[in-house]
Length: 290
Image (cartoon, rainbow, N blue to C red; front, side):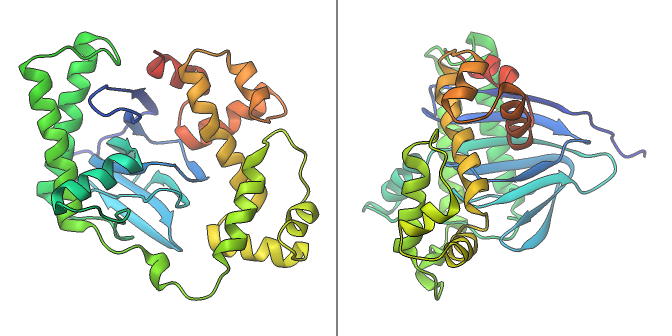
């Protein structure tokens, strides 16, 4: 049988069943995601084909029926691992939701859960994640994006969501690697992140950033890049993209959002946005407005 050949097609959407989260239903063949990070947990399920991605210093391949989770703030890429591309469904789950659910499972407050670097190969979990995503997408389509109505279908979808995410936590959550990672200087890295985030319109130089933590430009750049796997300017651009989501969701014009987040112009913003999210900001906005 011929291998399926996917096209670049993506749709972002939201549901009040998972406040603050974005969901993605997509297939890709030509698109390649540049190195980027998300503030939420990325919980995909590969439905067909295979995706290749760089993560934590290694190349991984996620084939159909796998759940390649990416932890918040961790740099990763994405591209086809086979000629035809891949099709998947993705939850971008807020940290608070997963942490609270972990605490409810344990009946006591829990630290932020972390998930393995390797692709999770758990067919039963994959089916649970896919089922929750399909049910929630069906409700969004039936009742309007972000306007799910009460009823039995809503109850079933929320139950499937809790079932999928609790199964992920119980079977696959591990300790945060920072607890076992030697070296580095977390306080200085945190201070540099704060400075980078304080004013996204500020024309900040590496020398100024380094001076704020009493380091040379060379040592500051090396420390930051080792800790985050991304140089300061690239990390700041990723933060700008994250900060752009809320005003886009509120319906602000793309050009205004680009300027407010520190991009030189709309085309510069659009280019970076598409590399990270797989769609231009206007299309993302159309699926997430309201």
